[in-house]
Image 1 (cartoon, rainbow over the protein chains, first blue to last red):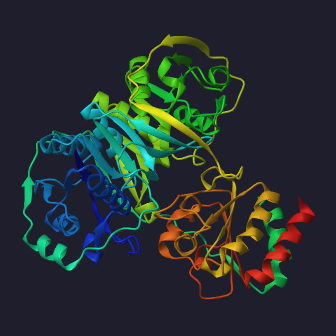
Image 2: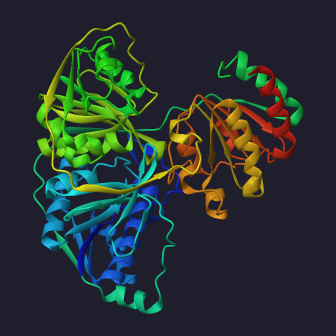
Length: 247
Length: 307
């Protein structure tokens, strides 16, 4: 039997265009919010692990009310314990604040294993897994791409290729894309999700020493040149050598 | 400002990014202390211009990677101030944990930094940038190939400190790479294929050219999702790897927004696609409207002439 906490973050669909208006990403322009893709692989791993070893899963998210959707989606796949952490006074939280709120929720859930994505698809930081592990005094295996369903070994990248590792509990495992097909909810799951209860908790995350000054669009490249047909390849190779000096 | 750098190593020496970390620290007016886990690369680090001091942190934990144990050892060896590492899988893990141990924030994947600790890092895989200012101590990781490296000729003093941490991870089996080919994350030249390649067997043409140029082969998400022979480790884009090589050649890739997010900061981009309306041409420095079947043999022959 194993108690797993899965950390799920709601992000704009990765196919969405990101628009900066007045120094901030315009979230109102985002039409589709989804569970961050790597987190979906973490959830799938947790589902397989509890199916093989027994136990239960708590899905935890940190976000405003719209983030209930990631928990409902998890509920539709059979997760019964759902926790959303939020305080309406929060806007930009720093790494320390996010990690402390999540670590507190993991402890309240009584989980000995934490599964999450290697990084979120919005902030791309990759701090949450290792940081939560540190606060829990736990080991952390990062960027896992394969696992055995009984949850005993994890495959991680290594300089020489990859390594199969074990980790002592309590532990945090961060997932990259795995070979698992992500399951889709069935009708019963969707019905269950509608009735699922979400436990909304606030937390004291303390103050921050980070000032989030704002967002900007990336620098646009000057337009390049386009050539017709493979007959232009020698000219392009010449430019790569003489103009770009990359050959 | 006191800066401590966690050296990024490769094999028995330093990874090239370590010189860039020192260069970035020097540009802030710091004379950084460089920590070398297990003593790896300590002599090399002492020779980097601008380094104030090198500490070989030797402990049993450094025989295999365990971010928690390494962070404990480095934390004990490092003074207060700003902890700087490389934005690699290991660097992000270790610096995040040192910051969490110290109760200070961490900012990862920084691409520009100025005194007063104003920093910029990409968000949404480069579709936008986040600017932050940190007052006080923090952890920072820097993206490789974005900061000018420090030169050589230094002669910093070197000391050894004995520090270790509790190892929680045990390696059961090391698995060698399926091939000796470069990973896209480490390559300065990348040739990527998309669905336009028609099938995974046609990637042989890309491998042949990449081998000749000393580059790596990447792929779009569409190719990775469609073909078993193209593993996710090759995927460039928002749900794959973010790369910034000197030269990125996109073959048969239309340029979905999530692919562009992963490669748009490449120094030079060449696109080969038969569709003149393909979005990839909007970010290409040199676009060639042709099928890969026509263009690749000419490209390979022309490059063979000058290499």
